[in-house]
Length: 107
Image 1 (tube, one colour):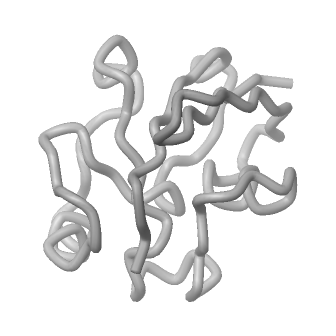
Image 2 (image 1 turned 180 degrees about the horizontal axis):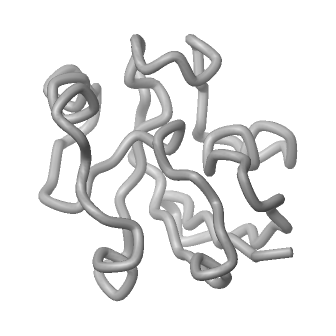
């Protein structure tokens, strides 16, 4: 099982096991990670699962598709070049060790 580390705005980290094929959003929610709301359940309509991809993982995670890029315009926290919606990050074995930084707010 791949591991994902979520870094909270205060620097606290949580490393959780993820199932291949799940999203980074569902992994966080199932593991009780605070900071991911996922109000729409991963339907790409709410932007409450915003994360920042650690720079060392950008190439493996990839960039946002056009519809995700449009939704990122509505995030509550600062949008950055490494912003993604965690519902659109599908876990695979190559993402073992992925580091995602959580924004200071989702609303």
